[in-house]
Length: 348
Ligand SMILES: [Zn+2]
Image (cartoon, rainbow, N blue to C red; front, top):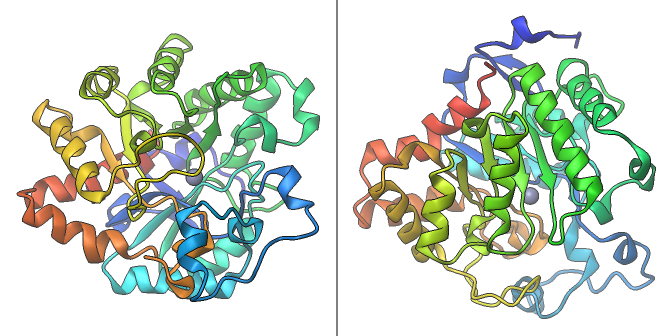
């Protein structure tokens, strides 16, 4: 692949296998991981990576009380192809893959998965949360991050010639570290320079999505092309949800398929899919239909169908019928699964 510029990107979506007409994207999962490693640096070097996942332990591992490093990493192209193939069979078409800096991105692997599975894959770029980043990032400037992200979109990412089609997931934590703020500022400069959307992973505190949305707006970001991820594990009240939507950002419910109330990364009551749909209905009833996207954010092997999980087809197989039976109209479902992703993935 060759270098592209802003003019070439405008009006197109950029997948790992090249530029496409955004009409070709179809039903799109906006936040997934296909080839990933979300082990913390400490976990990655542990001598005991835990048992192999099997029928007798997949529930316990997936539930999360039993934390097994082995579950937090998947590098198999064959498994990714098989799992994405099942999503295509269930009616899905495109996937946004957000394994960015710190999560061991594999652009060549994603291109192979796209070719073999018949899906379109849009790759993210930039850096995940502080602790996962290369420590060489600690002394880097905003401009250095901006230049890196711009080149990942125009030239190629992570040493490959495969170009990113979205920025993110940009990692933030609570407390929000100076490094994470510099990366986000760099991402906003790159957004202005390239016309890409930005996906942001907020820290696990109910006020942080709002803090980030206000930061984006006050630092020259395009709030309407800024997606706040993981709202279903972060905000639990209508006031905060509507206040966040009023900023004009895109709200992402991306843990569909995780249905246990227990959440291993924090002391919250995790909603199930039906409760997620109630929050989405609240947003729609307040005029926010065009700023909602959904996904599974699969980053545990136990959530893949070959390890006993729901797989990438879950939204099409199970959530769409639930939406239909809960009174969501066809045009509302299309807005969430097709039209808003298409808008966000089309370079401006
Ligand atoms: Zn993610």
